[in-house]
Length: 386
Image (cartoon, rainbow, N blue to C red; front, side, top):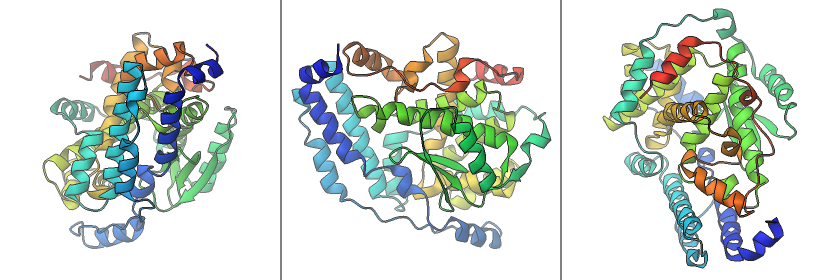
């Protein structure tokens, strides 16, 4: 079915999708969640010998949360005749509503934490056991490629060169106010790099395949879709999106045991929130019990405690396992690159494509073309995760 014909037949759907697109542009959670005073608080925390509880500052919200909620729930979904698509959009609205509640309560400790749980969930005992399983393995990796020796300007040059393989243009910015070494802002098609970070050769390859090879690919594919929900995100898309991104690291032979352990520590840290750990408690768990470097321990602790308790980080490992299994059981990876989609909604993607309401992926992750992984230990670990 041609797109114009599909639009005429589903005019109500396109109207609702357009309305949601207009509203959702204001609610990119990570824009608000990254503290503005990370470096100052880090210095104070280290000076206190890891006992000080950081007090983070956040950006002011640029919208009225109550009015935004009302506008989301005023959408007349009953006008969408197809029950599957109607239910799908209902889930989407509840998801966006949850993100608004998260943004509204950033920095309000338990209020933020409980709203975060509705959107991102929390690690199960199985997830913690998977993390501990990974941590039992010893690292036998090339130390040279793991040494941090490249500054942010070197990283910019590397990512610009890597990005030339894809026929899309994105912006690269530097910032001191992000908790990760790099992140993609979907709405502005921007790769943000941590200004004062030193990158290793391996990390550059990891981030290029992760951030550009998947997050940018799904950003641009999503924006080419007739329905904007592909760009703005399906319900619970974080797990699939991060799973696809780490899987790209695996396929490009850049996923190391050190990186897998980092993902495992994130699960351990997210689990500490359920146990009521404070910032300094989680840091102490990673630094004193697991013997992590103090800067690594700070980084992981910051990621899970920002906002008041942010559990998203446990989803990288669960997502990787799901995507790994999907690929090895013959799943079609290109459908997972159509936008910010989920494995759980593969049937919805296929239905929308059949109806002419969704297009195939224009851009495809380079690393997915061939499995270049040479690490047999990595396969053993991934096969045996629960």
